[in-house]
Length: 145
Image: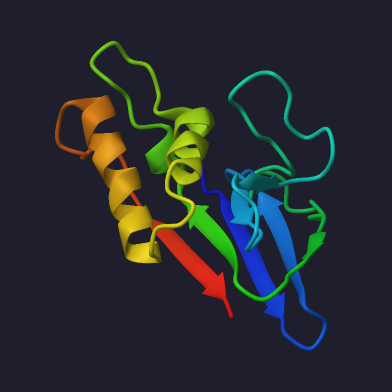
């Protein structure tokens, strides 16, 4: 199964648009915020550690994918990652999950982007207690200035 997220930044409009195809939620942080926020439609995420907006690619060829827009301001940050990060299991089989990735980002809100990504990898290694070979691990951290 293939998931995807398409992220487009429209500088003249100061807006970021997202389209999800079964992909984990993008996180963003306003320049003055102390916590990260999921870029998701209202109500798309409940009490569980799952996220589902639109179905993965090629499941149904007639699928129309929705689009979410958020305003972007100077020095806002964006964090995009693959499900290999949140699905990474520990020896007990527990996934790293959305809560751990958000907690890691929240604990490093003032860090440079390179340190932010390093913190995610460090916590991921501590969680899994092994080499990260279960799936692809991709993350992108962006600051809009």
